[in-house]
Every structure is written in C-alpha cells, then in structure tokens.
Amino acid sequence: MNILFAASEVAPFIKTGGLADVAGSLPQALAACGHDVRVILPLYEGIGQEWRSQMTYLFNFHVRLAWRSPYCGIFELKRDNVTYYFVDNEYYFKRSSIYGHYDDGERFAFFSRAIIETPGHLNWHPEVLHCNDWQTALVPIYLLEERHRVPQLYDTKSVYTIHNIEYQGRYGKQTLEDLFGLNAGYFNEHMLRYHGDVNLMKGAIYAADYVTTVSPTYAEELQYPFYAHGLEGVISDNRHKLRGILNGIDAALYDPAHDQGLTQNYSVDDLSGKAACKAALQRAVGLNEDPNVPIIACISRLVKHKGFELVTSSIHDIMATNAQMVVLGTGDWNFEEAFRQAQAQYPGRFSANIMYSASLSTAIYGGADLFLMPSVSEPCGLSQIIAMRYGTLPVVRETGGLRDTVRPCGVDNATGFSFADINAHDMVWVIREAVNLYHNDKYTWNALQRAGMTADFSWRSSAEEYLQVYNWITGLDMHPFGMGLGPFEDAAPVEETPAVESADAVEQPVEAPAAEEVKADEAKEEAPEVKEEAPAKKPARKTAAKKTTTRKTKAKAAAEEKAEEAPAAEVKEEVPAAEAKEETPAVEVKEEAPAAEAVKAEEVQEEAPEVKEEAPAKKPARKTAAKKTTATRRKK
Image 1 (cartoon, rainbow, N blue to C red):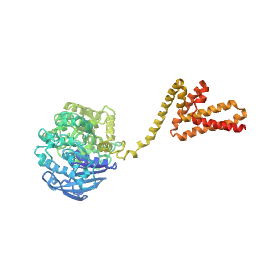
Image 2: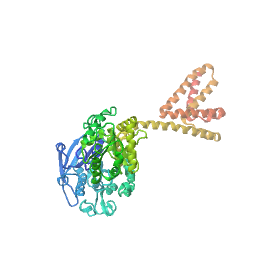
Image 3: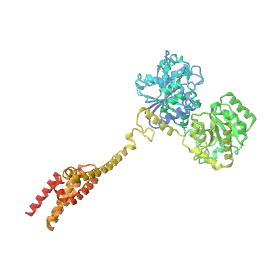
Image 4: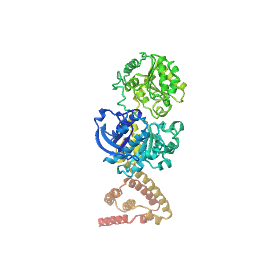
C-alpha cells in the first residue's frame, strides 16, 4: 500500500511536541510491514545541517494558492525504509520558530497545497493520504477537488487525525477565497462555517474519509462539550467514521538498559542502576541527596489543561508528605512563578526548572520515583508511558490516554496510581497513598515497576489498527492478524476452504435418508408407481444383485452354489467401486446406499412377490438376464 503521511513536524528532524513523535515513529512502523510510506513536512530553518547534508534536490514548481503562485522546492531524504519530502520556501519557513506567526494560516495553506500537488510531479500515487492536526486540515478539503484533476490522486483516500482538538485553525470569513483559495460554497454549505468564522478542523472532519484520535477514551470524550471545545456537534455527526487509536512510543529509543543519557543503565531484571540515577538527579537539580525519600516529577507545558492549577493550589499539602519534587517545563507565568516560590520556600526539597532540556528530562525519567500528570484533558500523553518504561510510577487523572494506559494500584496488572475527579484533594490523597507504598511495601512497589516496564506500548499494535482503517477506506485486502502481509489468498484462511466444503458434504447426506423415508411411506400407498421412481439407479443394482443371488441359492445344488458365489461376490465388490468412480463425494454414496438397502430389505420381506418383479430398474434387469444365460450355458 502507498501511504503519504503529512505533518507539520516530524522527529528527529524538528520537534515541539507529541505530534513529532507520532509522525516520526508511526511511518517507520508502517514501513516495517512492507508498505511504501512517504512523509512530507516543511523545510524549516530549525532543521540542522546534519540532515540537510543528506537531502537530495528533486524538482520545483509553483503552488496554486488563491491568486498567488509561490515557489515550492522538494528535497528528498531516505531513512529507515521511509522516504521524506521536505517542502522548501524560505519566505514561509525560514523563521526562528515553527508556530506562532501572524501568517500561520497562509503558511500552512501553502504547505497543504504543496502536499496535494507534489504527487502530480512524482511517478508514484498515494492510496492513503494521512493528515494531522489543523496545520494540514486543508488537505482533505483540497483533495475533494484535486482527486479528479491530478491522475495520481484519483483513488486516494484521506485520514485525518486529531491530536488536540483545542487548536482548530479558526480564521475570519474573508480568508476563505483570498487566502485559502476555496469557493464560498464551502462556507455557505456548512462545511467550514463555524460561528461566522472559517474553522479548518471542522472542514477536515467532514471532508476526510476517516477520522481518528490518539486514544479510545479521547474519542469518547470528544462527544461532550467539556472536551470538544465547541465541536461536539461536528464529532457527533461524524461518529460513524471516528475511531480512537492509542499512540505508542519508540521502545528502542526509550530503553533504560541502553539509554546513553542515564548515569547508569538498568533493566527490569536489575533495577540497581536506578538508585545511581536518582542520586545523580538530586545533585543535578539541587535536591538533598537522600535515597530513602521518593522524588515526585513533572515534565510538561505549564498550562491550565495540564492540571497545574491542582498542583499549585496544593503544593504545601504535597510537601507535607515525606517526598521531594522536581518540575521541568515552561508555560503560563502564574504557574512558573508559583513553582519558583515553592523552590525558595522548600530549599533542597523542591526544584523548579523553568526551561526545556532533553538531557534533564531523560535524567528525571530515570531518577524519579513518581511521575505526576493531573491533566484536565489529555488526548493521549506520552510522558506517562515513557515514565513507566523507566520504572517511574505515574500518578494521573483518569482522562483520555492517561486512563487507557495507566492501571491503578489495586487492580490486576497495575502500573501506577490514578484519581477520577478534577479535585486537588483527591490528587493529594492518591499521592499520599503512593508515598506510603514506597516507604512501607517495597514488594508491591517493585511489582508495579515491573508491570509498567514490561507493558507493550510499541507502535506495532497501533500500526495494525491504522492499517485496518486504511483497509476499510480503500477496500484493499490485508492480512487480518499481521500488518500488511498481502492479500488474503496468500494468508492462512485459504487453507480452511476445503474444510468448509467437506463439512457441507457431510451435512448433505443427512437430508437424503429423510427424503427416502418419506418415499418409503408413500410407497406403502402407491407401491407400483413410487417403487419405479424412488430407488436411485445404483442402489437398485445392488438390490437386484442380492435378489438374483437369493434365487440362485434356493434353486441350485451345492456344487453350483459354490460356482455361482464367486461371481456374485465379485458383483458386490465391483458395484460400489464403480459407483465411487462415478460419484465424487464418496461420503454421500456410502451413507445413502446402506439406508436405501435397509428400506428395500424390509420391503422385500413384506412384499416379496411384487418387489422382485417391479422394483429393479432396467439396468439391473439386464445384469440378471446375463447371469441366467451364463447359468444355462454351464448346465449345457
């Protein structure tokens, strides 16, 4: 299957959030199944020279964007069986940051048009075009028109994934024709209109052939106003083509046994190295070096929907437990300031790191004991999965992907702790339970660590679900139990076909005796007519042979009986063999013949004079005559 994956950021080239991780890992998982997967993204200024040196220039063209026709260059890079296309336009993408500019609508409209027009310049056609978030929301809409103009897009189907419905791409009505180059009908006929504005995400949900979200629970939550940010009606209208598929992580990248960013590596079988990582973390962030005190960690954007109102309102209650706390991230100024004040108030026990650092985040995952994620809304979340991979137990609120990935302590295969309500007291209560478990029940604590570290959060199962979606919308046959193993005729189910046919063959003879029994009953009333029609030809031969043998046995002497018995035996053995050659389903012959003979045997006993003259068919009569002639010759 040919798959074109479009995203505004892709790891490891450029990353600001979870979208980059998905766009970097999912295509590789799909390509590992044997599919032709290609990824297209902008060529940002932030993409380093180490990647640019590996790119190859392919071609350039001018994109048709409303009244503009800006330059578009395409560069190619192949890595891990995936082909990456980089869209070059320095006016739009040579910027210090990839988001947050006044003309983001125009920038990503240009990118969306480039996605649609690039296949027309390639000797390759995508069967599935997979788009992500509002930055590529125009692609399914453009595809509605261009699939009939660009031959490479004629049978292309679109999938649109919502990573965070909070960011929808809303712009004024005047942008529809002048900026996006779309007819006013898209606005007047409901697809893009939203409270007088243009809503790109709404249009993508209606235009796409299928819509996915990044966790099953999030797909359910989006049907409620609290989580849908005004699009609950749109989601409800399209719930027939909506599915939640849980994100995965790169298990090889996030592996404490091989991660070079850790002070000392460790594994599920030997957790001794985690103590060294904990001591190194305490030294790095200014916490008291104490191996007997649990460290509670937060790595996140410090914003309201991440639940930091709960944290800042209960800092003193959290610090009242026998624990330390470290925070890493940036966000709203009120949360940043609250954490700075907590660090000043609790020196050696609270560490506020208002920044982003990849190396420090790795040290926190490896050295912390608890990972706090009290999100109000969380589409999927990767941090809690990574924390479990490193043996750091998550404390989460039961929402979105947090609910789907963390099993609370007290249930089978528990991996962490959770609370349901958006309530600071509930959060603190669960944190106290976790701290008490750390101090008083090391056995259960270690069991939770092992369960989290061995849980399967790889991209394999997620890729299988995406391939099912691709199969549904394209109608292409794919192996039901493996990822893209080819058409069904190459798979195991084909071998089951003969078994089904043989089962039917066994069932068919069950009806035949029933029919013969009915005829037998009718034969008692209309013997002369039915007895000529009811018996099958071949069973009739067997009956005739037996009757002939009976007549000969009574009439002849002992010497003649011995001479006649040998041919008669041959008839009994040869007739079934002939029948087996003429009729392929041997099961039917073997089961029908005894039933027919049994019925006729009873008739012979009750109506011997009539049966011997009327029952035999024409062919058995000729055989009887032939035998009489032979007997006459022998007498002579």
